[in-house]
Image (cartoon, rainbow, N blue to C red; front, side, top):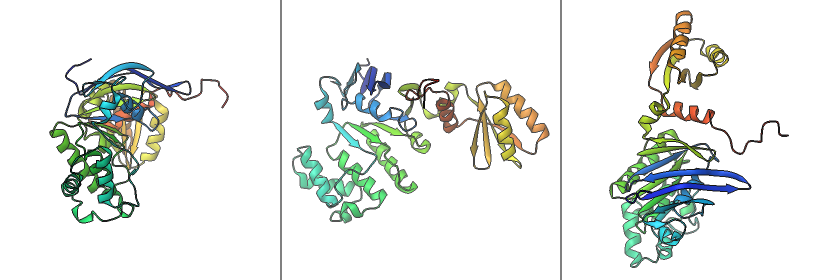
Length: 315
């Protein structure tokens, strides 16, 4: 394990009901970075993050988080962690100020009134301190949740689908704040399945059905997979899509509105398709760099579902 990492884990494994939801997970997270965990619902993202931070005991494996052993010093880790859940988890019948004061009291913070006032001011909530939390819009609830999970100045943030259900402006403001915190040395682990959220991270780990499939910077993931892509648009796109799906199982065909992304790892096969259909059909074929979403779908299509019934089993 890396001594200078904010988090360093090896072989983390967890099973529920006899099925492995996390299987032999390894990762090193440098301090002050934002690590995204991308994958479908039920892929083990949240379970992995919670084990990495000592919030859930693994069945096997070891690691250190913020200098503490995740197996024997979990309580010390918790004191330095801010956890923002996907669903709004504060008290809706309390005011914004009361919610923040309650959170500060839970962490045993001195001079709570000053701390709460600073938190309200920092996140632009000063004029809303006496408003009931339950009356806030989704974006303001998100801002309050972030204020609550950072009020004790944690060294590590756990963000579980943090911008689900908020508008694009609120999402951008949220990520500006997370980036500022990272600049101050705070490490963040983000569970998501949104592509525009994933690209905000310094490093992305693709997790599917308990296994880490690949990890790297968003811009490097398609190249790591050896993925090539053609963009196709024009008349008759529906018929072309159906035909391409029947033609070659090695080729991935993904629809984006009235555009197709035709991708795969066999560049020659893709070039042959482009030459064949481009010469006879009304569509326009253009090479382009594969997107993060192309890579995500490519990985998911090839991952084995650990909760699927065995072949031949009764449904």
